[in-house]
Amino acid sequence: MKKLTLLLILLAWAHWAVCAGAPKKIPVLLDTDIGSDIDDAFALALIVNSPELDLLGVTTVSGNAEARARLAAKMLEDAGRLDVPVAAGASGQPLPIQQCRLAEGFKSPSLLPIAAEDFLESEIRRRPGEITIVAIGPLTNVAALLKKYPDAAKEIKQIVLMGGSIERGYAPGSKPEPEYNIHMDPGAAQAVFTSGVPIVVAPLDVTAMLQLDAAARHRVFTQLTPVTNDLTLLYHLWNNETPTLFDPMAAALLLDPSLCETKPMAIEVDNEGFTREASGKPANATVADDAKRAPPRKTSAPSSSRKRRAESCTLMRARTWRRRRMTSPKRTLVPDGTSMPSADAACSSPTTRDERIKHLSRLSRRQRRSGHRAARPARPRGPPRSRAPARAEPSRTRLRPPAARRRR
Ligand SMILES: [Ca+2]
Image 1 (cartoon, rainbow, N blue to C red):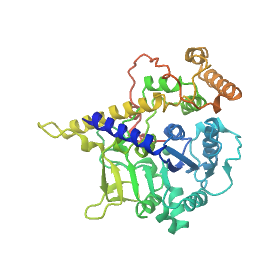
Image 2 (cartoon, rainbow, N blue to C red):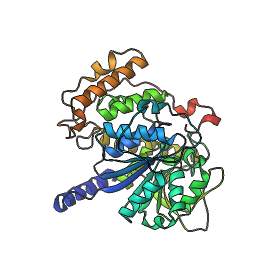
Image 3 (cartoon, rainbow, N blue to C red):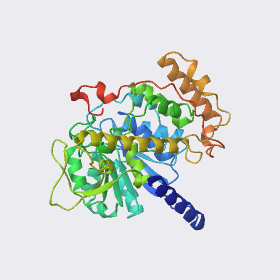
Image 4 (cartoon, protein in one colour):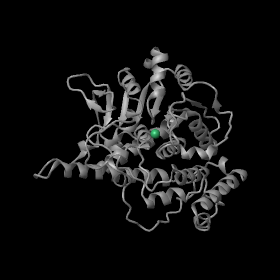
């Protein structure tokens, strides 16, 4: 039934698109702490490869914001998006940013010498009431914008953010806990949630189960485009096993709001970073809450079982959606598959991690020199669908001790 409904919506959308011409793109500003966890890079890759979105600029947040800005600018340049400006937020406490080694010393005219909040304000004034801010890091920059330019709040269309923990924490079946983006700057989160700007929230409840397993990684990394090569390099610099795609869900909700069930909620943020529903207060956010899709109780099954079933449904839908988006000829992350070296040739010869990183860097440079970056037509056929052998792989959250379970 759900599939049929989705099909009808897509058909109606296609009919409308043919009748009315290309649909208007959604203007987006991305605020990210790219460089710590790996999911920001996947979110940026998703946004630059989504024709529905018009990425107007990127701002970076959290300690070492300038290094993060260089990394974002490099990924954008590799994606052929030199037109997207990047502005760094205020530098704060230094954090582990191994991935930023990829853009050490990188210079680009797209790196703006202005503060993130000033850049955000100038873009919002340029298109009042139209722009969506996708916030996938601590909310420091967004709060700085609202504090310095309080009247800009009414000119922001909405803020779609990854953050918070409503009914579960990072581990399956765990209790709500301070989520990283909120916990890193609870004061900023309080300012955002009380600003009156429409907010859409993708909390841990709909993101913590989105592991990119070995087979999915293989599909992405063997595309061998400049963007997926960047993702491959960043994955190795990140130096962990299984990415959890927290942040791409915020962008995905913007692209396809039906991906999760949502409900209006009054969210309060405490000083530790807990995000709790306040009873008796007007809603200040629309919160993705897939647990509401759980099958109705028919037996005396414990609530934890129902919750696990709901999370399993979320995971299956997200995997299907991600596979379609990353491999569909129209929405692929592969700009053009012609004249590419085979995945085997690219991935099998280097034997060590360092050799593989150097090899992929050389490959990326070679593709850029040959003008491959500029070629962006859809592939005539789907990308290679070779599968890595299925391998049992423990989840990252299970490997980490409770105290270190938060995202880095
Ligand atoms: Ca992030």
